[in-house]
Image (cartoon, rainbow, N blue to C red; front, side, top):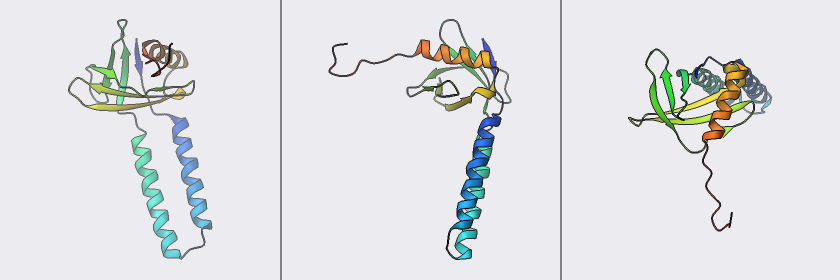
Length: 142
């Protein structure tokens, strides 16, 4: 199954909300105007960099029947084999996945529900939960 990825409007709105909240708090901060302006510039630059980082670097993810995951980087047509690294978060409205290519390059994949069709998002979550390997807790008899 191949799933195309696009920019998340939910994450864009969340970033805008955080940036506006930061700006309003900075405007209410009782310090010298030069410090306030400097902090505003830093906040705006950080917001712009975060906005640029929210563009998906991966164009598509392919989930194979045998459990393999393949990715297509934006601007390229070929799919590359990757393996999921430990520490994935699978939640009904947000999934965070760290992937590593065979050559060692790593990708962080932040997927919200509006980045793909709802059925594809559900299938991705089920696929990741199905593939998850849980280690038993040390010292338990389970």
